[in-house]
Image 1 (cartoon, helix red, strand yellow):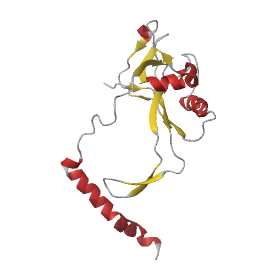
Image 2: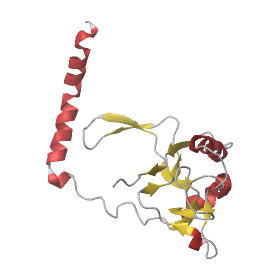
Image 3: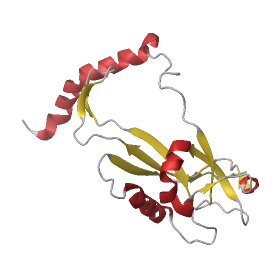
Image 4: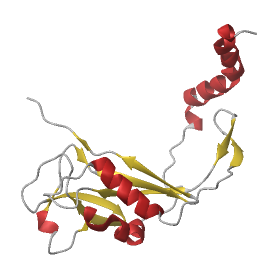
Length: 182
């Protein structure tokens, strides 16, 4: 058969999954809140960063936070790109409205082969590689540094991976900021 009708054939194969998804979306008892089912939240750590694209006053840091166990594990890899806020420097940290720092997202404990699972919503089979995800903010090493977000991410990512190339995935969540328009 020609490629001309391939999209129609694919849609006909996926129709039962789509119907299951619509049924799940329209049924309120299927979509109960998932509150408190993953255990207690990990303690957080107050951190400060020098933003890439938002000018601050001399000595100021943008206030951010990250999971304490993640900070303790990867603080050396972040180097001076993330600063621990202490009683001495917390007064220099400012909360910026409409700003989120660049974050390095670390997924560890992933399986190389994965396991086949079936979606409880659509009934479709998929491969799950597992793992747990966490993230930490990062910024420029100093106010005077002429670093780019991508180059800094590449350096931190290489340090996080180190010799651990199996079971770990590192991705970038870019810095976001919105300017006010009047």
